Structure formats: structure tokens, C-alpha cells
Image (cartoon, rainbow, N blue to C red; front, top):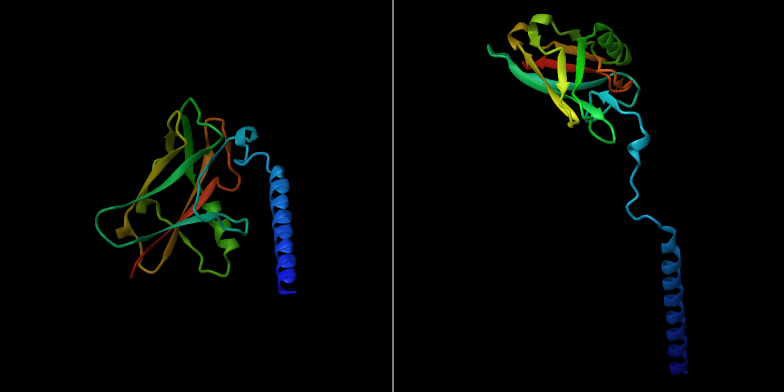
Length: 185
């Protein structure tokens, strides 16, 4: 009786194994391309200011930098990116502007937080025209903060907008950024 029972169990296990193998073999045929990636070749290239963690509320994106008060300027960088399926064979001249309306929109969208003060023009230097070199995707934009001109405890905002990109499309979601800067106490 015990022998008959173990033989029945053995047959059931073999049957279950065959069913499982048949499922694995038959269902794997559904996967035609194992390296499926998005096809960006049909998308419109855009010029953007990428940020690591964009806001999810549809408002202006921001970057932050802490400053210490000192006599020499503090270096800071952000990037301008050409988002496309391939690089462009010619230079892309990007024009930037300091846009107070962007800061106003940022403050309005974050009404529960203290409003950012606009960064005084004597507290920073930044090129307003920057070039993404041919066959490259991005370029660093250098900003020098003169922290000596800033008040401790106040958080400032530098609202930067791309106004022109050599005829390329400027990203609607990533065309502006507020760089938040504050001098540590």
C-alpha cells in the first residue's frame, strides 16, 4: 500500500513538473524582443535645464546651494541639456535670462513655504549666452555667488529661463529653474 502511494505521488510530481515546464516554454514565446527600449527617434528634440528631482505639482523646478559668507565668490554650476535621440552636428547657442516672473510663479506655487527673495544682481555673475558644442548633449553653466552681498538667514532665488536655443524647441516643463541660495548662519 505504501509503495502504491509513493508511486502515485511520484506520478503527480512528474505531471506537475511537466505542466510547469510546458507553461514556461509556451509563455516565453510572448517575449519577441528581450531588449525593448523606448524609441526616441520620433520625438522632437528639446533644450532644457535638467533637474535631479522635478516637482510633481507642475510648478517651477528648483535647485539649491548652501553658501558661506566669504570675500571670494562661490562657484556653482547647473546644466543645459539637448534632449534628443542623437547629438546635433552644429553648435546650439542658448540664451538665458533672469526672469522675476518665474520667481513670482514659484513663490505662488509654494505659498505654504516662506517666499524666496530675488537674488540681487550684484550678488552673482552668470553668462547669459552659452553654447552646447556640436556633437555634445550638455554644457555646464557657471554661476559665481558673491555671498558677502547677501543677508544671513534669507533664502534667495535666482530665476533662470531659456529664452532662445538657436531655433530648437525649448522645454515647457524644464525651460526655467529657480536656484535657491542661502547663507548659512
